Image 1 (cartoon, helix red, strand yellow):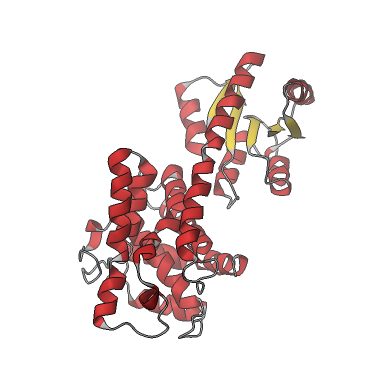
Image 2: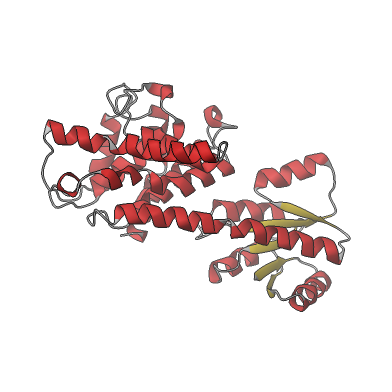
Length: 332
């Protein structure tokens, strides 16, 4: 397992590197948060970080916040090395996105125990891989969508990062919420596995009868995920996945499906996905239409403000429009 150690003290860097190398870890070092960021960018496979709190150029707190703000390929388990033990310091570190703390002066057992805890947490990402694989399997029945799932994931992340800065969403949209929606958004159309090919792959418009069948992909997914929730109640990612799959075609004016929910009756995750999903459909080519430009898609989403889309999320969308363009290019 690869570990990045970031500390401005050469003595600590050398001592920790020897300790971890002797225990089978592959170690990279950096002397401040800025160098740490560059090290992670150059080596995405490095997913465990031990960082000092007090450093020049970029502190451990700033480094942690920067890591959490990145669109990295996987979760980075972040441990702060600090002599600060006050409750408010721990709260500050956790708010920045730190996963654990090692007290100075450290002892060997504590360092190794915390790294092994981090390895166990990172191992849970195999669950994320399985989720994404299932979603890709469902998507494979419609070969017209390209990297749709990846784009929607990152669109949602960009929207969450913007919403988190708004007072209305304080305490609701945080790091954990953004992580969950990123993790579960690929399942939004998983119910399409239950839709016949003759309808799912039809190049033209649906008849009213066909559209009713197509709409059932929301409830097919909800029924499947409800069954999983019954077996594993309280699992947060299953709950959000069910809400997303069931509600991402609802509209805030009540004209959506499957239940005609209005406004805040629609789960927030469903309202976020609605904007991301529609935007991607608009700017993507299909056999029955050419792609729209970003500006054309923005106009349609703006026209849907308060009708199809939550106005707060439309505002967030406009604020991060450049990010959407970048994501689209990245997953072309």
